[in-house]
Image 1 (cartoon, rainbow, N blue to C red):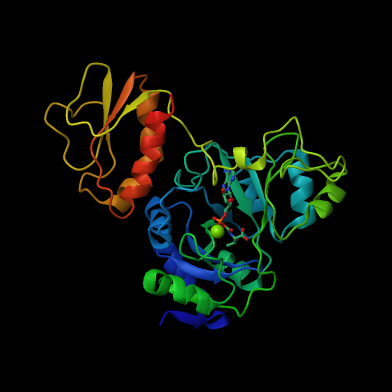
Image 2: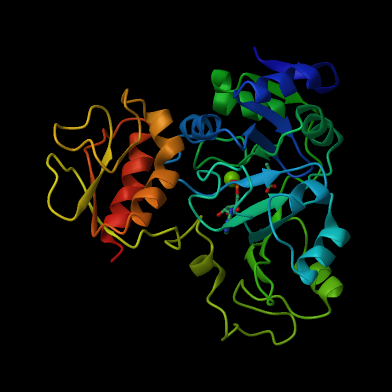
Length: 327
Ligand code: TXA
Ligand code: MG
């Protein structure tokens, strides 16, 4: 049984994260399933463990704002929110720094990144001991409720985490509030443990999203509803400029190849290979970076070799199908 009492397990848990394995840990909101955010294969394992049929972007957890500033750019408003609510149950979606070493899979290929500084002492100790940004969704199987005890995590994910740090029941039991803080207007993407009223009190202005504002009491006209902006729910994912042709068994004029496994003869040039050995975890880790690289060649069409629907193949194919339908 991989449940370990937290104070006895921090050092080993940090080592597991550094080695690219998954660690479940308590935060003040719910338990998270963590992986080294700079390691694409480790992040891919999160999606496999949760059985998510889609690559929703994940929240990166860091120990303090200084660590967050290395990953994302803060506007003055974003900085004010961070100063008021971190550490605590608030997630800020911010423009991702291009030089940040975070895996593209964490943000599902988007140019933005969701970051939070958890307040729980075990989460803080783990982040400091690991010295890594940790990508972590709630530690439940996709579609189940978020876990608030180590036992819930074990029941849902069992042996899929190398370790479950037991820090007792979580204090809040409700996920963090997610704010889009990329622009001048702050928009709520997901209501959560930090209230709209508290956020508006800090900003001194209403927050968009959620279909209402405390100032007007009516739906905002100038911003799309939250679900149109949150890639977790809808289709605002990174979309390649090039056309995407799926199930390719040949290469046609104007095409570059996105291979999986052994490429067919004559297609060795200008290709990216998601996984030469046909490993779906490796393929998931490479997907978004490979799409960007091929898109940047200026080719008209990206031809994608067939990818099995099993395991992570379902999420990979879901993403590719939406890219193919996108234009
Ligand atoms: O309290 C919490 O936030 C917990 C603990 C473990 O920290 N985590 C959590 O993660 O609830 P998850 O993966 O279950 O939810 C992340 C939310 C999703 O709604 C996702 O769409 C949104 O954050 N999100 C992540 N990155 C985003 C981005 N770049 N743009 C917009 N939304 C993003
Ligand atoms: Mg969740």
